[in-house]
Length: 124
Image (cartoon, one colour):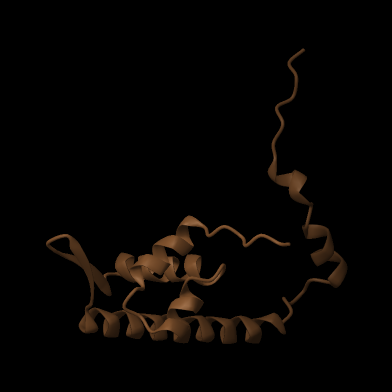
């Protein structure tokens, strides 16, 4: 008869913290993959300032700052737009060839990773 796997610390923490959640959500959050993911998401939200932990006596409460969430969302959208623009510019330049240089010249420019390492010569 197979024994049940032991729960990890992350699973135990998420299961305890998620007591007020509906059972299906709590089961997914406390699963083998869900617990570390849930902890990473909460830590990411706290790290970006979107969420804060307020202690009411002995009980922690997670509060969401909606204004900060909008700022982070807008920053992510701007970053995506910038990366898409940079990628589009790079794709446009990738098809261009440098004038006056043959394909063989461009191949010989790469000297391998050893070219970046300088080894001092022995003194005689």
